[in-house]
Amino acid sequence: MIAAVASVAVGVAAAGVGLVATSSPTLQSAPNLPTMSEPSTGDSSTPAPADASSAAAIISPALVDIVSDFSYQGAQGAGTGIVLSATGEVVTNNHVVNGATSISVTDVGNGRTYSAKVLGYDTAHDVAVLQLQGASGLATATMSQTVTTVGEAVVAVGNAGGTGGTPTAAAGSVTALGQSITASDELTGTAERLSDLIQVDAAIESGDSGGALVDAAGAVVGINTAGSRSASSDAGRGFAVPIADAMRVVAVIESGTGSGTTHVGDSAFLGVLLGSSGPGRQRSTAGLVVRGVVAGGPAATVGIVAGDVITAVDGTAVDSATTLGQLMNAYHPGQKVTLAWTTAAGAAHSATVVLVSGPPA
Image (cartoon, rainbow, N blue to C red; front, side, top):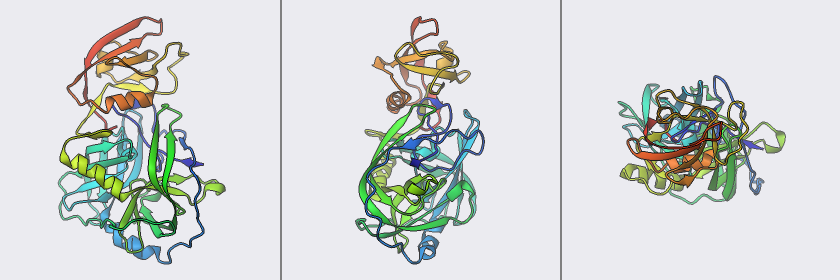
């Protein structure tokens, strides 16, 4: 079984952490691991590269350790990032930072720690771009310009276990291309379908998310995204976003104008906490049960409380946390939306709220 830990919040705040792949387990209040459906296994007969340490030594100075605080969940998680510019532009997985109320990043190359701002993200490709505040002179990664092939020797390098320090290296080979997985979170009901992934037999672990999958020369071929649980049947299976796909998302974010599933700038926030069920209430109305609200947030200002059911945003029906997240991805702070909801007593309400700035999705 493929498993993962992450945090979800796009205009909402999740009840716990979890959506897509291998960021490290929360350091406080750890939730259940979400699971992913399994794609075809592919061929894993090719031997691993002989010298993982050499490839890791090349890429490691261009990696960062990421610690994300999720204050609404009372939790903390860790992941990895790849440095794109000497002035601190970093690419990582969206699930490493989504829902984070603050992000701290330590550059492996110089050992310094920086606060980070999310410039943009793409939920469909699980890619986010960070800007480290006050960074300069950082070592940058080299991106592979060749096409990845099945059987190619690779090394997954990252912050395995979320402990920081010297990055770990896991050798392996490419076993399949163009793979798809579905990641879901039992706590929030959110799910994402990721496609066109590189499958490897390297042991990608929790905390490696956002790290580098490199070739024997240390050039980045992919971004580590999903890894196996400890079950022996799945040991040493992992997935990565092809670096060409990731860099296309980076280019859109750098352009300053979002498109499709790519959001640029601050995230809009409703201030509702979501879970699989409301407190003490069985859902009888189609919609999404509110587990709690953020005091002073837009939802709280119009009287939404725990146990209410959100049924629509601007007239579009809401049937899951995934749907709400996808809808909110199109909005920015300062915009107005009309919420429809029902109370525990069954009364229907509608009100217009002004969205505020919140955690990235």
